Length: 149
Length: 67
Image 1 (cartoon, rainbow over the protein chains, first blue to last red):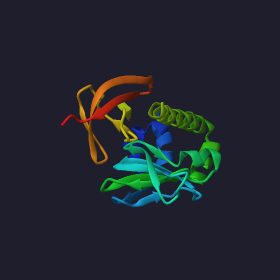
Image 2 (image 1 turned 180 degrees about the horizontal axis):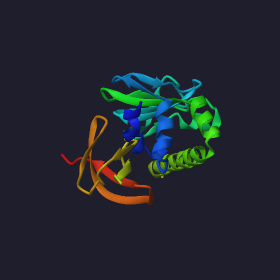
Image 3 (image 1 turned 120 degrees about the vertical axis):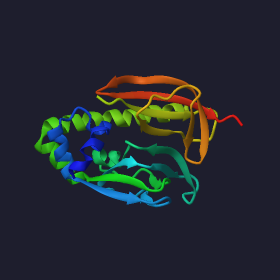
């Protein structure tokens, strides 16, 4: 998995980590490919992994409050963005459905248990990742606030 | 260090939910961008938060591409 080190270096979740830290991250990553229209995760299901988009584009859909059969697009995410980060910190179910809309869409997948174990075993890595994760959630919140303002 | 621009594209006065994408180039006013099926024109670019470790946090306000 060493070939993904340059990719990880361009993901903000891992910024400030040293090369030896990125090697540890690479060891717990798995590449997955999605095709246009594929559902990557579904709202309400219990997630157990963080996904990082390395190529492609996805749309984030939420069930309409009045009619759950209707889904509303609330955001689009592209290269470098993270999916499933909320479940990592709050253990809640998926807050939205994620659908690939680019052909192909590549993601790196990290299971929560592997990431948590790495963060607990190496608290320097853990601190940096959690700080970056908070910054990412903050960025998404600013994006959403401007749209709803 | 490579500069990465984490861009929040916000479409003003439109149903489109915008997008968040990393890019290697800073967007500029006048750029035409593709978000999903639609094209938009960037008309304002702001720094959303201070840069950190080579990552620049940018907001690009967009409007539907003029026909």
